[in-house]
Length: 406
Image 1 (cartoon, rainbow, N blue to C red):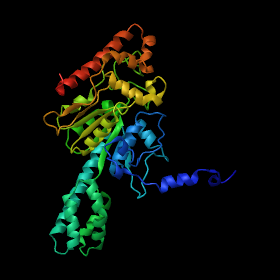
Image 2 (cartoon, rainbow, N blue to C red):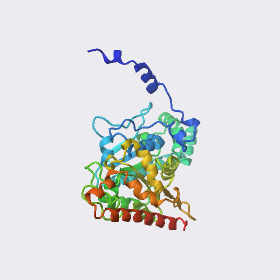
Image 3 (cartoon, rainbow, N blue to C red):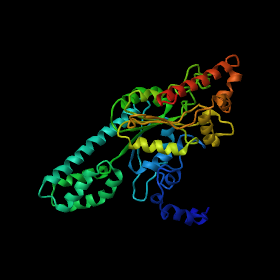
Image 4 (tube, one colour):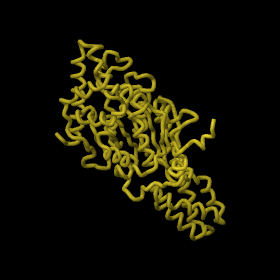
């Protein structure tokens, strides 16, 4: 047995990379593929299945918003690979900042995240009240009033808040006015938080849908990320309302008979909800754009992220999942779009080309969850696969009509 430090040939290099190398995001626009990857990921080395389709979305979200994220994560795969004590992929930067992550149950995770935001709103209101009252008092120093004024003027702009917060705290601590020092009890809340509600399709389409619907029916600024594997991945691959017709899964052993629930179009009917459908391997720029727009939108946002899973049985293995995402969009299995209520004239944008539905069957038969159908249920396989393709075409046509493309 030897001391491990004497046996690690590249330990000095690793030490340098982790402790001395800085991120270069200021040199590139963060809404580009290159620029986003120069941002620090606050999600690293998860315990998910190799090639998992969920984790790239999680990683990207933490790169774009990580320092300021409050995450309510539903029970499921993402709660396992994020919260397997004592390990977690959530890391801190050199200043000690990181993601605030917590797990709640299938049935109440949306409400849990809603509560996080409601609490944050109350804190923000109190911070604004303290600062506004301080501006009216003669006992508050002029230089502190100047910083307080700038802070209130830029409230909600996290980049500006972050620039001001150190100076603000320093001047509050040095102030002779005791009342303004109440701000110090909100020191960690002076930079606004980005609340994210995250989970799989079992939570969002099924067990927790009532709560999710309640949250998007309100107008609090929360962001919902659905990691859509179209199956209850963590509990062994049961069918969910996100599963498509003809898909084999537990409780649909001979192929699911009904169409995929279109949760995106359901959310659009409210009119005030930002909705996006993304598939990273098909269009990385659209994926980044959807994340940035959802987070910037001052209201409820819903992102549906197509996430290939080991339960899909992708031909060639899950390492090919990005290619699978691309083919899924080309054949109409998934449609990329963004619905932004701020664009009043035409809020819906379809970001993918018109699909070639003749490729639909060829695509689904590259996955075990579909190609087993001819063995398990040969008498009905053709009818179910045809129905699945027709369901996909109907979904696309409804979107096309809404987008004014027909």
